[in-house]
Length: 170
Image 1 (cartoon, rainbow, N blue to C red):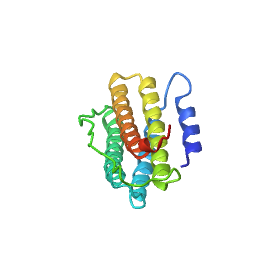
Image 2 (image 1 turned 90 degrees about the vertical axis):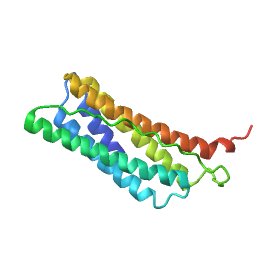
Image 3 (image 1 turned 180 degrees about the horizontal axis):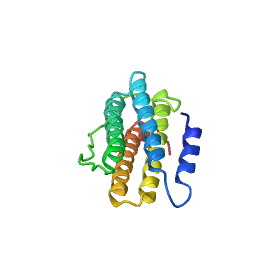
Image 4 (image 1 turned 180 degrees about the vertical axis):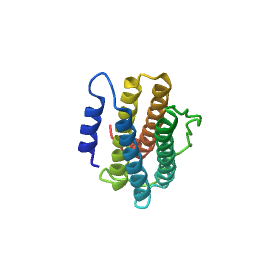
């Protein structure tokens, strides 16, 4: 699913006062699968060593989110019960190699920017679901996922900052 299709589906899903939880979960599953694929493929071509580490970490995080969504789907189907997210968000310490030469057309920077956009869109989806779900447990579930995605965005932003900070000329 490309970004335009995702944004269209998300706007339709979150339009109005109610929300179709099953469709939201399915859209989330699609997003997490796409994230796993993206981070797994891009870690093979990105050159910045800390970005490679971060992409491996984020692929594992997206796998965890996929597992949560699948578990939620089954729990709602079988028991009509929301699940709790008990794992705390991990925050690996990542520092960019400042000696590495990066030009402004770098593939690494473009890949990181694409990842940031995807994380921001995922965060919007889960925040929107949290607002629309009437059940407090459901709202907490989607808020927790939104927080994870926000954390991923901030980690990517940190790598981007380290890669580009010293390139700004006065």
